[in-house]
Length: 333
Ligand SMILES: *Cc1c(COP(=O)(O)O)cnc(C)c1O
Ligand code: SF4
Image 1 (cartoon, rainbow, N blue to C red):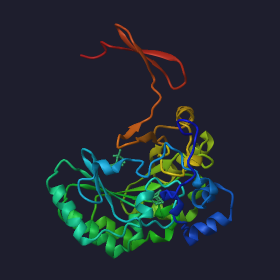
Image 2: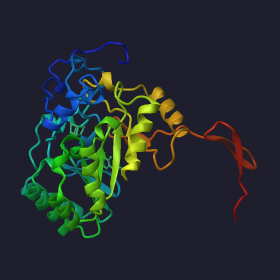
Image 3: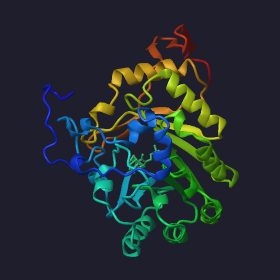
């Protein structure tokens, strides 16, 4: 995959220490299908030793936009807070492995102060994303302490919690967590889910607890070779999420994290897949296919363009089913 077709083989790079950790719940799920799509996401493989020259330990370039330690402010109206490096299970393709491998400890009272000061100086920030690692690895008490602290200074702001916990350890989601989150609302949950097989009865129940508790849930999916790189698998996944009341939000092209090339789907294949997928599923079921550009470029949507040309009188488009249609330029006043 490298520019000159050569590869380093993991010369002491971060991926060689990326820990294996699989929750007991996921171990049971994997035992039912040991070579299946869930196993592939969590069981280490020898291919991780292959580090492509295009890969980078800080694939998102977040070092470029961190004004305060553990706070990333890359987009105008939202910031990302790295709550912890821990997860209930480590995904082998993890793009946040620099945090998870450094075992970033839970956010400390003293680290929150400078963040609160920064936010006070930046009233344009409307959303605070709590991520990591997985913030739900913290105890309810520790998590609520952090969230309440931010809430005191952020009355109008929306909180977003990025988590894989409903998939990795569904029992972690229970009434006390839901009422705690409701009390510091508005909170949205962004759950990462990559295959229909992850949406067991237990996972569905966990997601239902949020939704019935008045906490909206959207999903993020990473496009992964050998896990979900087919129209049928993605269709089954997104249909099931919508049935459960979860809006598919993003489908991510794989980031350039070290030792993950065996998971990466070539961009051209991803675009073709997504264009085909759109002819099969509704707008509600369809996430935005996006890539986080290397070196801090940020997220961009990767849509096939339906725009074809502009003439003196019209804009010309190709429809989803391939036919050509004109929209008049002088259609409004
Ligand atoms: C993804 C991301 C966000 C959120 O972007 P949305 O497009 O609003 O989901 C915010 N900050 C950082 C650093 C991110 O990586
Ligand atoms: S849950 Fe997220 S942060 Fe944790 S290992 Fe998986 S991808 Fe990485």
